[in-house]
Amino acid sequence: MGHQYLQFKANTQVNMMRTVRSLKSKFSRLLNDRGGNFAIMTALLATPLLIVAGVAVDYSYAASQRTHLQEIADAAALEGGKIFDGTNLSAATTAAKNFLKGYSAQMPANVTSTMTADGRTFKVALNASVDTSIMKIANVNSVPIAAGAAAVAPIKPTKITFTPTQAQGYWYKKISIMVVRPGSPLEVTLGTIVYQPTTLNNSGQGTMTVVPSNGSIDLGAYTKLILKMEIKTDYCGTGYSGSVSSNSKQTVTCTASLLPSKLVYSNTLRTDNPDQMDSLYVDGKQLKKGTAYPLESYFGCAATQSHAWEDGGGADRQDFFYTVSADCSGTDGNYVRLTQ
Image (cartoon, rainbow, N blue to C red; front, side, top):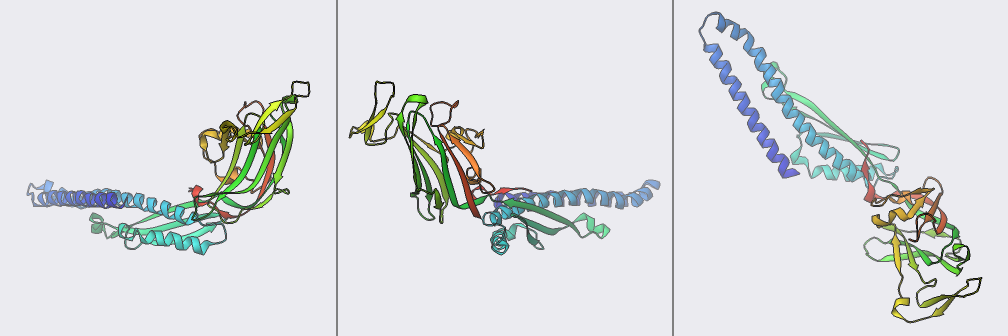
């Protein structure tokens, strides 16, 4: 952005100087014309015409400066908004001002910046003036310009409570709550919910095992929070082979097995995979495939949410139901967005 801007600025200044020289040249020729009344009229009209032309040239240049200043204000607001949580205005202001220092050579020398907050929204205001060229004839030496931007990052859960309410279906399912810690690529599992079908009657019914048992999980410091559903379509978990009784009870039996096909899951769904988001329902609404939703769309920072997750067998009947609530105090800079 910096190189392109400097080249654009140089080209604009060259074009403006050419226009000034052309206008001055024409003005000089008109004043030297000795054609009687024409020369007198020209002398009377030339200065206002020159000023009008100068206004257009100077304001065009000021507009280009203002556009670039807006781009810098947007970027500075995003930089501060990444860390602003509604309470740390000083830290967000420092981040934004440090960003602006890197663009000081590309802004007017007299730029002033103001950082404010409105709730959890971080705001940046930039003000400056652009020197004029032709308008100096009318004692207008500068044109004021201003740019404003605002950004907000979604609230970030620090503690969550999972409460499974129902699980059903023919297939074995394991849901994991995972985080990625700062400075590490590893995914750490903090909690699990396992559904084990015990019968295929009534479209599959079984038991749930929740760890931790109270469903309350302290997330700690993390850069990414993920829900993962691992599915095994032969009724039993990894390391087991499932079979179903031939009587009316249709009882599921799991037998230990070391066959390679029994040691792996059949399918895996993740909340950080946009192509699988249509398997998740939040408060009765199916999420859209192909969209990366921020964390607060999954975990009820504002209020407890009800989720339903389809394991892949068909969208007409979800298979895992739970509520989730969260304590939120931080922000998720990965999803910071402009609001102004």
